[in-house]
Length: 348
Ligand code: SAH
Ligand code: SF4
Image (cartoon, rainbow, N blue to C red; front, side):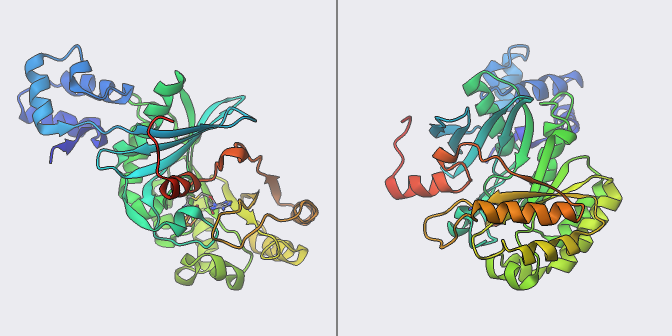
């Protein structure tokens, strides 16, 4: 199997090319082409044909092919179903904000974490994505829309910290100067709370934003919807979050899906406020997206308002997420599931 060249660091290319007898500037040339998004070695016009042939024998270039695309009628949100060379499919969502384009990409085909409200969690796990497959999602979206993506969120299918090494590699590649040059401060990583990996990430002191999917103020409620809580409970998770803040000096964003009658009472809000007291954090409330095959429904508007007011009174900053692309099932995992049920027609 040829090696995955777009997942390699520039210094790794340098070492490999030196062994092939190439001058040292060759690695920078090839690296730049790869991160400009070429899909074949023949597009690398400043590389000799002889060396291109050698590259072709030894390496392959990952790509993400558009299997299906949905465009929202309300805003400019686009949802993609991509397929990779082995036929695995993942979703990604491209959102347009006044400050530029944000892409929400997948890090795994499926997910092992099994959260009860999540469409991806319901579909099981196929495999980890490589760093280059994460980059390819961004590149295809840039090409398809003739735009430059300025922000990335790792909030699509999969649990990024369950694919730690590839995700860290992606972060380093995508932020590199000769790469897409998207700064770490423009990248958010969302996790359901794999505690040992939060410590590991904290020690790397990257400047990314960490989002933690909390979704409950106590173990009783959290374990009901998120199996990961049985492995790492809320207090352990919040201890890891405090360590993360201490190491990185970065504010953590807690995601909280508002589920009707499950976690949305004023008492739940008070309990949450108490748990987060004194932390450098922000709470993002998301009215849960109803997923077929689950019983969960969005909280009522008054409930959300009340929840916000309790948190604010306790001095916690809170926002209610604007739901972009609500007409195209923009929460990840849903498009793939409906495509699997209907059978996807290419290019429709
Ligand atoms: N695995 C990571 C990142 C991908 S999920 C994580 O869990 O954080 C991205 C976000 O979508 C998470 O906050 C997740 O809890 C949330 N989510 C999943 N299903 C949802 C649904 N039906 N409605 C609202 N948010 C959902
Ligand atoms: Fe996996 Fe995140 Fe979905 Fe949970 S919410 S099943 S961790 S993708």
